[in-house]
Image 1: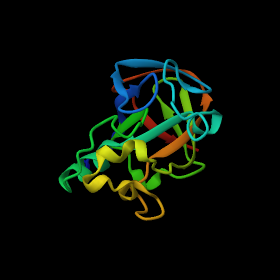
Image 2: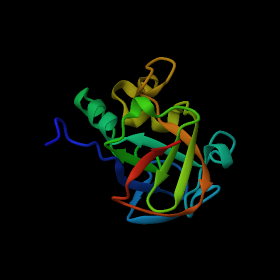
Image 3: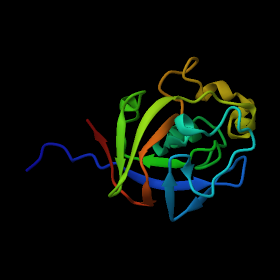
Amino acid sequence: MLDKPLQFAQVFQINASGGGVPKLPLRSAEVNTLGIVGDDHNNKVNHGGPDKAICLYSLELIRALQVEGHPIFVGSTGENITTAGLDWSLVEAGVRLKIGPSVELEITKYTTPCQTIRDSFRDQNIERMSSKANPGWARAYARVLQPGTIAVGDAIRIVD
């Protein structure tokens, strides 16, 4: 018998929009080198492109922020993939993630929060999600190393 349960990380939700937030849920999505097919950004200077193709965030952190009284919800801060069960402390630049049977991502950097997500925070304090002001609470950007299809419930693994 195991002393502690195995951790299982998975895709909780896939989110996309024609531009802006909130990003809305999808059951599955095609992922290419520029991100989720059909997803777009209103500000193409600061969002999108190969090194910021996918934005990821943790369901556990969203729930913790809700407990603090923030009106955040899944997709409200623009993440494309909401993870569940993934140890967010391991998500840093250079880490590679395998999602489902084929998609592989490489974390490139933490995001810088912008004013478009202010309604997700009590007092509109976007710094609550800043890696500089609150290390460990930022969303992460990733580049797509291997395109493919992802679906809600797909396993997420950290790969060497």
